[in-house]
Image (cartoon, rainbow, N blue to C red; front, side):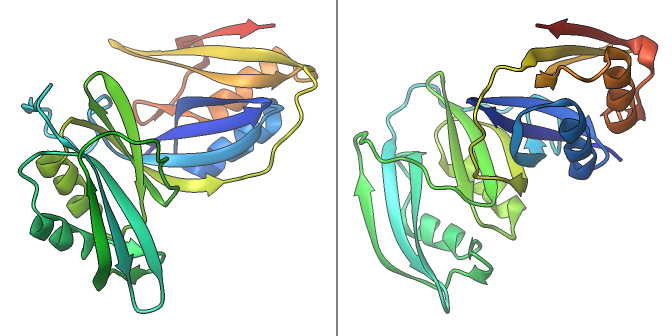
Length: 247
């Protein structure tokens, strides 16, 4: 069974794109062969409204423009760790008890949260940034996309919390499977990208891979893509892919 992955690479600028493969290692192998860019991270899509992953395909009703609690910061601790967790755009009827119950299903690094030093509620937007953690939750609120990250061993509770208490539409949950914080200098010696269009019966999937190595033969690039990627849980046939290399 293949998975869809959200991939971020960096060469001067960062690019993010989706690829389907049997494993994140297949994507690492492919990108190391054909792309000049460094792989920053690879996240497996755990839940996706767009790709119908872990959904029942039913429509849900979400509030569009109601008032919300902009941010509620929680200072949590486990047996050996502590961490601030910021929750954004909470529905107005969210209570302190609701959040405490949810956070005690989550982790700090690898330990369950057991208590709280304090909490601070902010009703109006400020300039604080998001933290980086193991799972990335993506949701839309008032035409803006938000990314929030959690260490967690209970993805179902994470999903339920965002669906029940966060004002907005839950789009995806992504699992970090690879991360690299180094920065590679951009020397411009590459093709900008190869655009891909996979076709299987009535299904179409469009994506791209950036910063293609100039010393790679185009036919070899095609072969590496068909060997390492998947579409609709099947091996990709070369005649069902449209390639376009942008110089």
